[in-house]
Length: 636
Image (spheres, rainbow, N blue to C red):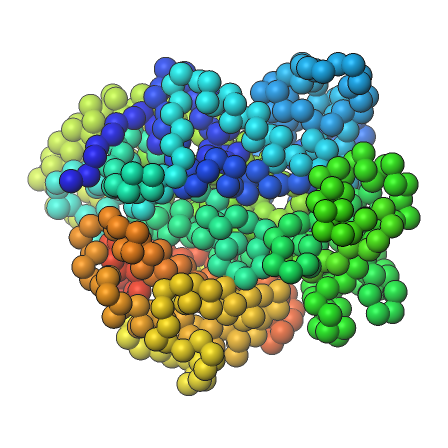
């Protein structure tokens, strides 16, 4: 029997987006924040570079927007981009007020052991420059911005009397119910859904929890750990994306996986070498010839947008066979390097690399998902009562390629926008007396109106009064593979990745497959092979000891069941990512097709419609007639 907990707001994810929301909500609300692992195990904690915002007198929001649109390669949502970047200065000032120790232009006196950073102003902050930015625009806390930001916000949240943080609590499924209650009234088998909590697994006590809440904020992070080399911690496997899709949300642009150009290429390290090194003058060289190759690739050289630099490095690696290129900052003063990049300096020194004299071996690593759950700038999704923020969400800010350090800004701005919107939503819910009025109205409409679509339209308008559904322009729909059949050529799957391997082996092999076939460059043949291999794995886990069919009516309750469930969910997500890339017949931003190297005439956002009959055990396949017809009209 599941334990039941009630709270006003449930936040899934304890990173920057989740805590920004929690700390900005009214203290009168009870808030529960879930962390799948320890609190420091989140991408926000590991962010090095900083947070981009127009803070300098010589900069402007218009210039920041322009740089973002250029990096996004035609796929940024203009209105959301304007709204999010326009709130940049306020967001950074809010972080200052929380006590984040940003590096300042005038260094703190050495004898000041306890400086009060909450009094800092944005005009006091030292700004650095990163790729794609036309000026210095990135506020930072040394070279460990994420850790300093998260330490400050976590301390605030832990001392707040209305916030409860639960580490090692993993959300498994979002709880939803039709907005129109028990009424059978619907259109095209679709319903306006209301999110009312989540099923959760408590890893500490190995028990299942049911958490009921009036609103849910999804801030669960990205999906980088689907790849072999990734900067994200091991909890980032896209489970938030899948929960939202099952609950009734659209997904957008999953094919745009950004690869950070300069991950440390040393063993299995996932350590990033901050783009700020290149912003301060770092140069990329071929280890064999000593040639600085970026000068011939782009006029911005090492400070070109990430997709350009990552592809250039990948091409060098293909040619040199070494698995890395060199990033060199040894021409900069040693004292400057040690003062501005203390974490990177000490980390490399412990590994035998003195960056003041030695080049750093680097290679691209999976870093950020530019796509995700469709939301507006206020974080509202397609499901009433469900908000999303951070890497799990798609606001359209990042387009086809994220501009460096815009992601932390998005976390704070959208998180605080959610906090401003959510109390109004709760007030409207209260006025509806827990939706009873809406149910009665629906029943009356059914009796009074014979025209099915007319009644449905009125019902939708009632829902729209309490929830503003996100809209999209210029979309193309991704058609997912049909059940038990494949339209792909009969390429043989890699014999080293045979179908009868175990759960752990498939998980590892999936990372290798996506890295090889869904990496910085792709082709139809690679993507088809990946889809066939994933299909074989899906078939193999249908016959594991813990049958997925046995889990169709309940959430997994044991670690073995969770392992099967997690893998099934990752395989389904991998299918959607690869299929999205397979159906984009162009090269744009972070998506580069060797067989379609040019831009399409019209930039289109890839959309995956939600699954209408999703259950926890039905992850393996979806037929075309199982896709949920979304209620929002897309402008094509």
